[in-house]
Length: 222
Ligand SMILES: *Cc1c(COP(=O)(O)O)cnc(C)c1O
View 1 (cartoon, protein in one colour):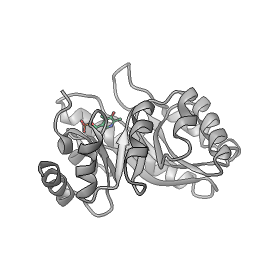
View 2 (cartoon, protein in one colour):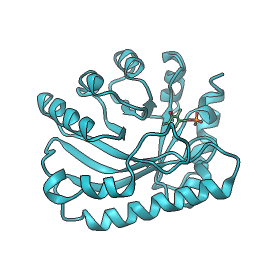
View 3 (tube, protein in one colour):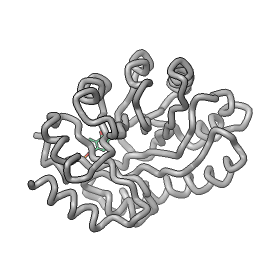
View 4 (cartoon, helix red, strand yellow):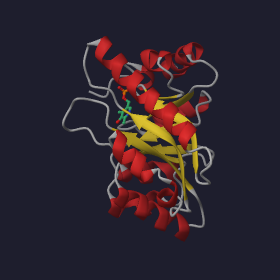
């Protein structure tokens, strides 16, 4: 019951054009069902092993998003069913996703992860790498991938101004690339995935239209 209430409260505050990803990592299938029964259909997981275990046990109309770092040798396990991969952070991964998508007779939508935080451990492309990847003769090779936008994670800090600055930066890169890629067949900049439980309100103010929220729905993971 509490999950239903938390979901309703969050949804109340989200503008209509913002998509909510319920981040269910570490939570059991029964807990996910509670959110499903409350109407939630999009769930995010950060580990391939976990997403592939849970997917067959839950209803078919769930859209599964992979939001965590992805190793190339694991793409094959999620390629048949994944709805959106948020965390594409290398050329190697694009090559592998394209190959596995073709084998599964489908186009896999992805977001390019952008490095916006200060922390050394964060994955993602910088702006000049994005420009290279999204150059027309380059990206159009990946016929079984649709590049649907960008994802970023802000620095994990209480310093709101810093987080806000990082979100602003990512939004401006998103806006520029959205314009520059308009004519490309397999690029469709629809989604800017930024914001988690601690910072999604700020992310939305700064232009996010896809938020990845875990603990504010399911409780702390401890
Ligand atoms: C865990 C996770 C989230 C959600 O974090 P919460 O603080 O629980 O909302 C969002 N994005 C990514 C990439 C994550 O790994």
